Each structure stands twice: as C-alpha cells, then as structure tokens.
Image 1 (cartoon, rainbow, N blue to C red):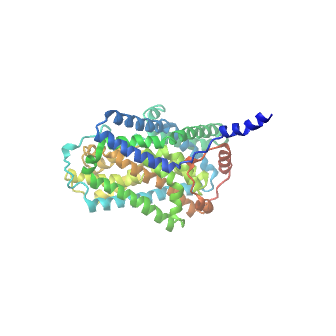
Image 2 (image 1 turned 45 degrees about the vertical axis):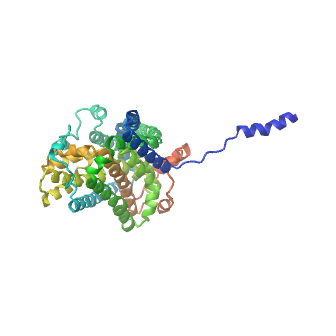
Image 3 (image 1 turned 135 degrees about the horizontal axis):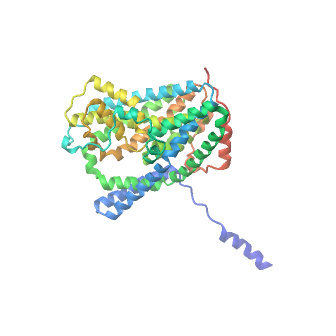
Length: 455
C-alpha cells in the first residue's frame, strides 16, 4: 500500500504536461513573413532551385485550398445573406445605405490614386518601353462585363470559377426564396447548414496561413528579387502609399467623424482579417474572418451576413479604385499617351461601377483591362504589371477587406443598430479561439432576433 501511495504522485507528475505559451495569430503571420523573406533571399542569392520550388509549392497549395471553397462559399453566402434580410426591419434602406457608402469610399479612393499618380509620374524613368509589354490572354470589356453576368449553364461558373456569374445565380436564388416564403424554408435551412460547413472547413485552411505566408512571400522574393522591384519602385510605392492613405487615413476619419467611434478600436478588432487578407490576397477567402470580426465590432449578425459577402464580391477600394487609377497613368506614360480630364472621370466611373469585375479573387487583371479598354489605352500595358502584381496585390487586398469591415460599422452606427459596448471591447483574434458549439448556439440565437432599423 505504501508503494502505491508513493507511486501515485510520481505517476501524476510524469503524466502532467507544462502548457506551452499560446502564440498569437498575428505573431505567427509576422514570423511567417520574416521566415519567408529570409528563405526567399537565400534561394535567390545562393541559387537554391529546390528551395524556390518548395516555397512555390507551399504558397500555391495554400492559395489553391482557399480557392477550393470559393465557388460554393460565394453562392451560399450570397443566397443566405439575401434571405437573412427578411429578418431585418427596413432592409431595403439598410442595403441602399451600404451600397451608397461603398460608392462614396470608392470615389475617395480613386481620387487619391489619381492625385498620387499625377504628382509622382510613376511611368517616368523606369527604363521600360512598350516592347516590354504584352497583351493578356483574357481582356475585360464592358460588353464582356455585361453579357458575362448571365451564365450559359449552371455548371460552368463553378468549374471555371466565374465569381460574377455565381453571384448572379445566388442573387436570383435568394430573391426567389424570399418570394416563396414558407415553402423555401427547407432549402434555406440546408443552405445555412452548407454555409456553416464550408466556413468551418475554410477555418482549418485559414489556420495554415502562417505556413502559406512563408511560401508566398518566400517565392515572391526568390522569383522577382529586389532588382525587379527597383524598376517599379515609384509605382510600387504609389500603390502602397495610396492604399495606406485609405486604410489608415480615410477609414479612420470616416469612423471618427461619421460613425462617432474610436478608429483605434476598429483596427484592434479588424486586424485579424486585414493581416490574413495581406497574406492570402483573397477577399473571398478572408470572408469568414471578416464577417466574424465585423460581428465582434458590434454590427448585428443579420446585417453583417449581408454586408460582408456583398462587400467581398463588390467592395474593392484597393484593387478596383487606387490600383487601376495609378496603373492607367503608369501605362499611359510608358506608351506616351496623354490623358485628359474626361479620361480621369472615366477612371472614376469604371472604378465605382465595374468593381464587381474583380470578384474578390487574387489579382485585378480583369478590372485593369476593363479600365484600359474604356480609356483606349494599349492592353499590352497589362503585361508590364503582371510580374510585380503579387507584391502589389497584398496591400490592395488588405485595403479591400478593411473597407468591407469599415462600411458596415459606419452604416450600423448611422442607423443606430451598432452595439457600441461590443465595439469598445472588440480586440480578441477570432482565429485564436475555438468555434465551439456554445458560440455557434449564441450566434444562432442572435440570428433569430430581428434588427430594428429606424425609418
């Protein structure tokens, strides 16, 4: 008996584990960025081809995993978000105000892009010539944009990942479900369950973001190097400065002056989505995180479930406003084409109306070709920017996602439906917390409560 008594504490001590310190998700991302830069520099400076290929594979697999869920996620997110508007009083007013603020912030962003481009002349002194450019394989035009909204069948948009057509079909299905009323309840219940399933699976992919960061950043450095960035130094700086002015200037001002909330608190709450967007370069891939941080900033779930998916496919201040404005000026200077006042007005128009063409995926080639074709600029200019595009796309997407979270906060505050206590306490990263059953139940209970919007 004494032997058993003596062995019990020893057994407990040997079986106990010292808990490891929990590394914040943002710190994991930063560590991935640093490690990626170091490995990319090593692969390029020492000409380590296997390391470069490995980084490429890691980054490509991460992006591919994100894209794998894009088509069904967009369809069910848009469908459910539209049908959720039935739970919101005065939903039409809320939707129209959201669209209005999307347009206002896009106009501000494109104006900043134009001013920066006119002041810095990014196409001057680069050493690039029209011969360095080449036409893209796929170009966007207004005819393609308008006719391309309606799919020829229901399968091809999903196999070819045509997000714009998927959004169209989801919107039609959502509106039809609203018209059917009670008879559509089984379909809506299934759609909500499928959406939850997709979001849960995507959360697992999101947790791999630090590893994906190593691959994406490392390959960018190994493949492009600093020499290429040097040729595009002014243009790259313009894009980053323009996005930074919108991200850290325009949005905070609107939050402080219009929404009457603390902008610093917004970044505390929204930072997990912004940093993931920077790494993944996908607004749609970041959408579950964006939606969760927006809810935690005090925006009602019923409204968030509409505004964030809607914004993830149409709200692109970085890709569809700042970037095409700067790119048009850059390409015009390379090809020695003079732009007039009417051209700058056209750029603003395309940025506001055509932003859905970017479709929330990595890259903004479709939006750029749409802008160039509208202005009559050579499409060969797109080839000049393709090499540097991944580096630019990180900052563009971060700006996109910040706007997708900021506008719902602004609208909710103006409509007096923002939970200001929740906003003031929003700081925890949702990626670090388990999406357990209790949390799901609380969100479900919140979803059943109607949101009152003043007339």
